[in-house]
Amino acid sequence: MAYILFDNFNPNPYRIAANDSDLGNLNYSTDLYNVVDVSDSDFTSVRQNLKSASYSGGNISYTDITPPAGQPAGFDDAASLEAYFDKVNEEIDIFLASDNSNPMATSIKDYQTYLKGLDTSTLTFPMTSTWEKYCADNSISYYHPLQIP
Image 1 (cartoon, rainbow, N blue to C red):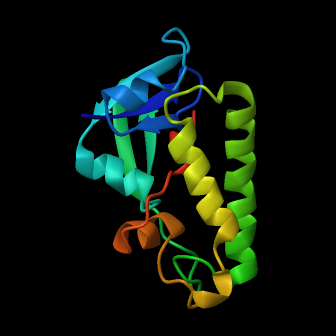
Image 2 (image 1 turned 30 degrees about the vertical axis):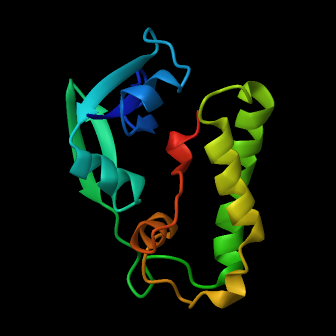
């Protein structure tokens, strides 16, 4: 069972969790968030940035994420991918500074180490997939930013 957490005042996802254990590690208040059970395939689509989710009136809906016409689905060049990594690393830094005893901390830190050590010049650009889809297709352990507590 996978989950998407929605802020009571915002239809967009606040966090996602692959299972009960990850959900328990997210440190959220049940008063502020709706926890919605989702299928593994819907979770994977959101985790890989292939679909966006929204929540309204007790219903969840999904929309395919499509790039603007003429743009690749992923990243045009190494600089744009590295800018994305910077944002992810910033979220990881905030998490580790506030909750480094969280059971997910070690594996998230390992992911950050991987991102910081990756030589993006070895990748082919433009990327034709999202970073998360690239990781899944190449057996790279990864975290979507919404999985970071």
